Length: 117
Length: 330
Image (tube, chains in turn yellow, green):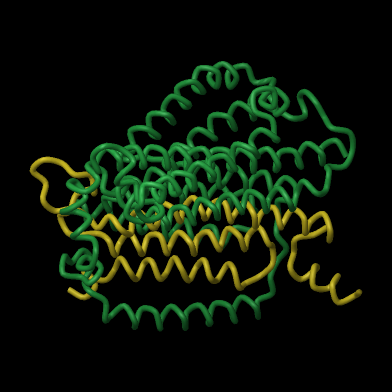
């Protein structure tokens, strides 16, 4: 019973933790950005799961349908996805600049270069 | 049945995420990230979040891997190895945090429960009243463009600012070497099949984007989705025929101006609401009766959103591939 009621959230947590793992493991900056994206998507999945109502249809008003999913999380996540790609682009641009300035995007090498000056 | 689809999709998401974490080859990781985007879009569809699924399919499976691939070709494809101590440390930290979060979910309301607090607050009002107050069937568009329009204005400004940030980071440093023209900018130019299919596909993509833009009140869609799809049409054209050809239609400078025009359009509509004696972004009195006023306001600000999103996405792509061209020449 408990599993049936909550498994969705547990998988969200697992995805979130995989994203977090990729981010804190360090190493390549682009890999970190991909990890951050996994983390971000897991939050999206969480919000959409919270907005789901059993038997509810998509929130577009139709004759004869009484039960709808919660539209508010949909609005929040819809805009968050597009904002997410814009900020990802900014992060990738930063990675390109770091590559040009340091010649590498491996975190360890960047720190070594920094401590030398 | 729905439960099975749900579990299958979540399982696939989990497997893909593990594979991404595992992959040492970043090209593979990016391709898997594209699959991950498509899977999450399918999951949103199952959850009844059609507008969200639409956006995620265009962004997560389309533009995001494209930008990452462009970055990889500048920064290198393989990542260095990590030492085992660090892996063990990260793994134990992640497991600890995950266990705490799972413990926290035990108090959460059951998944899909209509009595959950999230279903109680403003959502019932949106569902029961939006037809009378706004007069359009798509509740998501009502909330996005009218009830919470101020919120959306913030998001559009964030997208615009991120576009400016990309521009500031990468334009300040002109790509080394002479600017390249011709085939270096479009490696696909030699592929006749791609070019023919591209030429056939691009007009329907642009028309579809306009449909999504203006039909967003009645079905899934709206400015955010339409903007991304519109940009994809131009990006596809640039990939097949070269940046210099696209620059004849929309140059970098034009896109920058258009991005600002979109934000400005959104903000101005808000001010018009104030001129009629209401709050900012309240378009009740823009026309004779409140519902028509809402319609006009929503169409105008969705247009602003679409223009900004499309031009920022195009701008980011142009700037990224400009860097790529510079590197190839240098």
